[in-house]
Image (cartoon, rainbow, N blue to C red; front, side, top):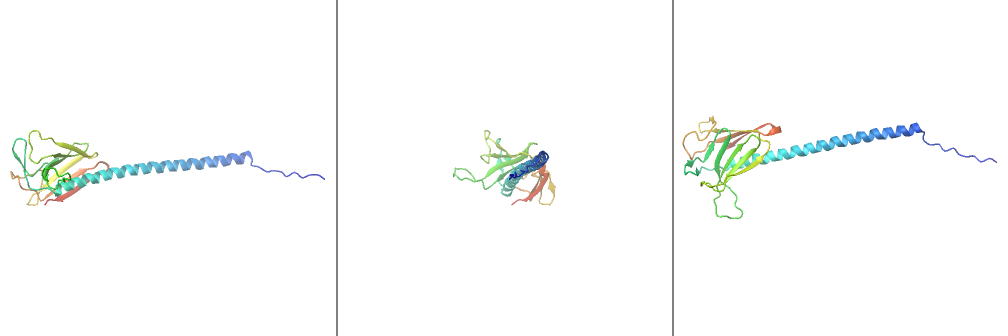
Length: 196
């Protein structure tokens, strides 16, 4: 009796090459897609961080302007400065609501200023309202991508002015302050803050 030997059938070389080629194409497509997804996620995180920084800066400026008081300040030379002094590219004023969690003996009033140096948005502040010759000014870069900053001031007659005070009155405030900020990739942002 003769034994039947079963024939084992395997893959041919062509079939193996086709399978490897298909796998390589699929793996390349998956890698390319994951790489694009990772780049998109990184870009989105970066834009979200920039938007959050812009929103924080605008919130701080809005809070400063909403708490402006009609208290003039003394300059280092003793001259009386207006409660709010502004030009087209900067503003300086006195605000209330300066937090004092450690209960230092100081006022809750603070003299502050805002301007753009062409690269970023700067907030200035002083530790006292009435300045002495050695009073240091603290500058803080609040926003990196602030290319341009413009102010306008609404007088009691309803006219927008490029500077304040309109007269030599040091106690008066405008009815509103409008600022226009170029926030880098987010373009121009314009806000109007009605003063108390």
